Amino acid sequence: MVSNLSKEAKLYPIVEKWMTKQFQCFKTSQNTGLKHGRIDVVGVRDVGGEFAGDIETISIEVKRGTEAFVTASGQALGYKIYANRVYLADIRSDSFSHDEINIANHLGIGLIQIKNKKCHEILSSPFYVPMISHNLALLEKFALGKCQSCGSFFETGKMTGRLGKFNNLSEVMKTACDQEKGFSFWNYEVGKRKNRTGVRLSKKDDPYDRRFICPDCVWTFYKEIK
Image (cartoon, rainbow, N blue to C red):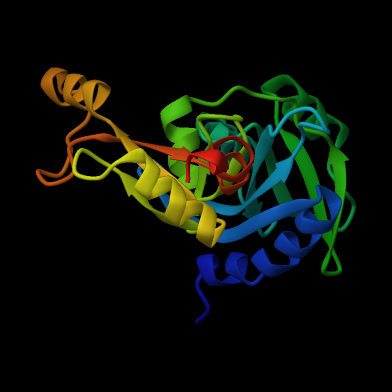
C-alpha cells in the first residue's frame, strides 16, 4: 500500500519543474530537511537587479487534496521562518473555493493548484523577512554563502581554502586569484562570544563563525596583492 507521503512525493518533481520556470530559480531542491521541519519543494532566485546581489527563497508545501485546508495552510505558513515567500500547492480539479482563497489571503500564503500534472498560481505569496539564522541554514543546504565584500550570494563550494591565523592574506589571495576562486575566513571574536553565552553549541574543533569572500571580489579588488 502506497503511503500518503509517497503519493505527495510523486508530485514534488512536477512542482519543482514548474517553480524553476515560473520563478526563474537558479537553485531548487525537494524534501529539504532542516532543524525544525522538512520543506517539500524550495527554490532560490535572484531579485536584486543589476545593482545588488539580493536573492529570495521560496518554499512550497505540497498536498494531495485530502488534508484539511487550514491544517495544510498552517504548515505552509510555518516555513516563513526560513523563506521569503511561502506557498501551498494542492491537487484541485476545480481550483480553490472562494472561502479557501480568503483564508489563504488572511493567513498570508500563496496558493498553487495542481491539476493534470500541471501547476497554476492562484494566489501570490506576500514577502516575508525570515529569521536570519534559519534562512542562512536553508541557504547552506544549497552551498550558498554571502560575500562579506559585495553582499552577493555565491556557491561556497567554489573556494580555494580559508584565511586563518597560520597563513597570510597574500598567500591566500594569490592562490584564490590564480584559481579564480573565493575563500573563507573565521570571525574569531563573534564565534567566541556565541560559544561563551551559549547562543550556539559548536563542535570542539570548529568553534568560530565562518565568513566568505566571493571569486569576483577576489579578482576585482584583491588581485594586486598577489
